[in-house]
Length: 302
Image (spheres, rainbow, N blue to C red):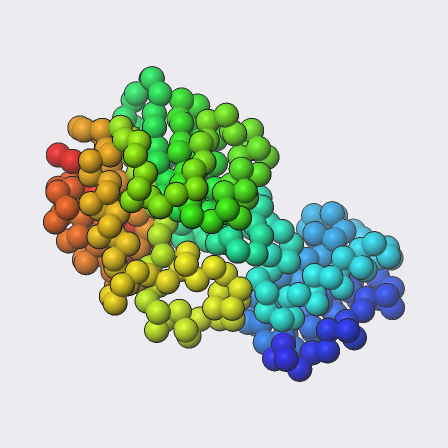
């Protein structure tokens, strides 16, 4: 486990080649207790980060010398990673919808699961066939990955993103600049229930939905490092966010096109569908992710 690794002893100065450095990374990650299936993938991502070589280039240069700057970078990254800090925080970015998305401690890390929510929302907006401005509100914008991905796909889209975390808003702003969509993304630090603007074609959210007892059993990367406010569901049953969201969303949507889309957790589909219907959103469906698991609830006004 990570507690057994003395971080002061982590060094790559004696590694003669990139290959040797990679094998040392693999061993350190294994010793830290990181899942065996992830170790080699992570090692490759770390080597790519410090050498700036892609997979094909590395195959040709495994036996080349690792320069001192790369060695120092490796040491910095591994000293953090063996303490089970998420790899994305150690590198400063994760991946979402083919984009490299900046993240930092305190900001929720994008997941592949959420691509279902993003793809579905983008397709439904495009299918509206509206040539004038499309307006979307994202509740809990986080790193901005969803908003930025949608803005890249739909030229006439304007997004307002709200979040209570200044770190999240700063990160979303950075990612919007990176992908040149800043002019169409407005960010606001506020509680979504106090947000006054309305007239949106869609409201989207990947909310906190993990039940507290489940959160307490998760890997240390999530439990100890990621912001719990972005993960743990509200209320005794973990579903209070959806109740508040449903009440809030209905009056802010533009009929007859407007819809709300939210990501859900395991076993929550029926309850969230019922919540949306109770709030007056009467065209409600559940959409599965790539693994066939219920992942998104979409609700609209008939």
